[in-house]
Amino acid sequence: MNLNLLLSIPRRWIPNGFLILILSCTSQAIAEGNALNTPLEENLEHSSSSQLDEKNDLTLRDVVHLMLQNNPELASFAKEVRALEGIKIQAGKFRNPELAIESEDINANARPDSRAAQFTTIRFSQLIELGGKRSARINAASIGQELADRNYESKRLELIARVANMFIKVLAGQERLQLAKESIQLAQKVVSSASKRVEAGKAPPIEETKAKLAFSTAGIELEQTKRDLVAARNQLSLLWGNPSPQFRKVLGDLESRVVIPNFGMLEQRIHENPIVLYSIKNVEQYEALLEIEKLRRIPDITIGAGVRRYTQADETTAIVNVSIPIPLFDLNQGNLQAANQRVGKAIDEQSATDLQLRSELTRAYEALLAAQNEIKVLHDEVLPGARSSFDIASKGYELGRFSFLEMLDAQRTLFQNQVLYIRALANYHRLINEIERLIASPIDGVANQLISIRSNKDHEE
Image (cartoon, rainbow, N blue to C red; front, side, top):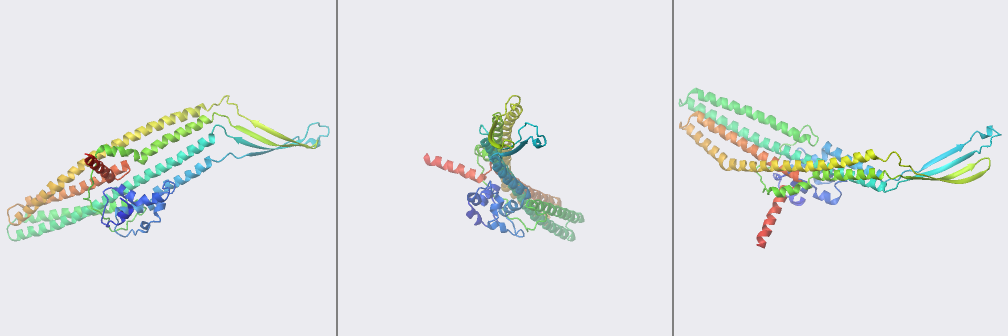
């Protein structure tokens, strides 16, 4: 989905997954510049979304923009990326030359009978690194910068996933609050109906008392739902650094769905996750550091040149010196051993990261299939049956065909299943977000690729 298409969508739209937003909101910024060296939130400052009014109703896209622009944790990672640019620059610098001034037998004038020669030497010396040490140092610093880039991308992905999950929590809380309001209105109608039956002598007074108790319980549920929604709103706004949320509500449709591709196609996308790319680059960095330690076994040469002035003889002589360390005792064995072990450790960590992500993807995928089935059963079977049962029980109670307890049980069953349906929808979207975080791409894109492959096969046949 491109940015222009996204901007044309009505504000009540919610994407099926948060990474659809990442691609649509940032594709232009990444195309115009290096998003790794110029962090994303700086690119977004020039977009129209940088002028978001937090007091308006917010879509998921709006919330993501607010977080990318204002989250202090993400800003700290961006500063580390820029700091490592300086490390890379410093790694390419040559060693500074040295100036030495020596003067010998400076008290010769106080000893007239001394035959020592009084002289002063001015010498410049330069360390010359051999074996490609400077190139290896630049390479290690460059990989370190790329490692910071991957770390920044990983943190950005994590925060967007967190924002998307909190957005869904707020959206589900709004739906839950609306359901609680409808429930208390329904409980009020039951109280009125019970009161009329008691006044008409068709029911004992205990039924009116029970109806009022049910109304009070619905009121408690409403207040608890309000508190939960307030807490969720605060958690959401804190992600962009605002402890007091100003927005009225979030906009979205919990009942939106996606086509779930097969597990194999999702598993192939794991290697696009910044965490995996970070672990791969981490191995490269330790290999580069190992190369530096190997090159340190090669002695460097210090070359010097200067002049020497003999005071008594009134003569000046040119001097040249060359010094080379003799690798007799220190062959850098300890540092080499440490660097070798760290390379092995990085390889083990890469394997562990890959296994962990595959395990998380398997768990999320199976849970998503279960959530999808749960939603289908609730929507197609449970909720229609619960509504029908309540309607029949309510009308039957008014006509005296059903007892109050039967009507109250039908009402409670309907409310509980409606709450369960909202929770199932919220869980479904959280699992979509989790899978998209793991594969670092929108699940819709994988599904569309699967549809395209099937279409091509059908066409060939």
